[in-house]
Amino acid sequence: MSLQSAKKSYKAIYTYLLITIALSTVVWLLTLNAGNTGRIGGRIYGYGIMWCPALATYITCKLLKIKFSGLAWQWGKPKYMIWCYFIPLIYALISYLIIWTFGWGGFYNKAFVTQAAHELGWSKLPQSVFIILFFIVEGVIGMFGSMSTALGEEIGWRGFLVPELSNVTSYTKTSVISGVIWAFWHYPLLIFGNYNEGTPPLYGMACFTMMVISISFVFTWFRLKSNSLWTGVMLHASHNLFIQAFFTPITTNTGHTAYFIDEFGVVVPAMCLLLAIYFWTRRREVVNLVTV
Image 1 (tube, rainbow, N blue to C red):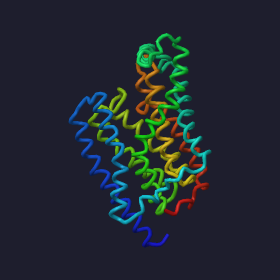
Image 2: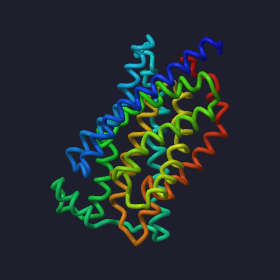
Image 3: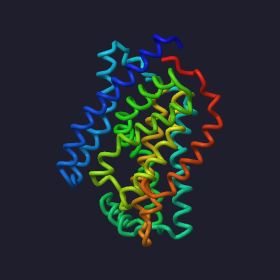
Image 4: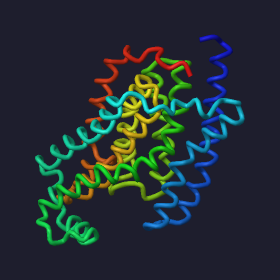
């Protein structure tokens, strides 16, 4: 890459990050001011914060005369999308099987299952049958809602930031830098808000940070390999859906469960670290694939 092209990428990265922080700060303050936001506030502010990276990308493109339509909107090869759907499901399933097997959390949360069955009007079904049907319905229909929020972040992180970083540095550094930025972007709500599942703040932040940086190796690999931002959307949506909407709520507390489950316990981040190591060993497969 020429020095001029590198300067353009650095300028794009810095501009994007400054605008993302500025926009996100507004939503952070609104969220923190609301306190315990509840269902309505959580939905509105949740969508708001997750779409800040997308809006920042659009503004950056306009300011720097970059084609917003050139952000790898193409769907790409179906095999990559299939893998991006199933990889989070696989590592989430393995993580929670470990948790349930060692008694760090219990299977299953009868109160959650009963409430969910009542809300869906499926109370007459045997709970074992309901759990299977609920898993299938969430895994199919729930993906549309999950993708609608994940898209906002992924337009920014993998649609814009990752390819710009890959223009000026290696796959490994792109994964680490984008992962650190992505993790830090969550810190205001982790530190001052209620974005945690009950672990001490420092412990939860450490687990969350390890998970985000580790999983960034997977996100970056698929983004560069497929040249499609939709791989990030699929990975992100699948991760959020299966962990937050199924495995965590269906797990019972056996005493210290919060230290092991979800994004703020140790098991899922450990699985993501193993995945990061695996995809790092395949880093040469994505060298110089992106020229945007």
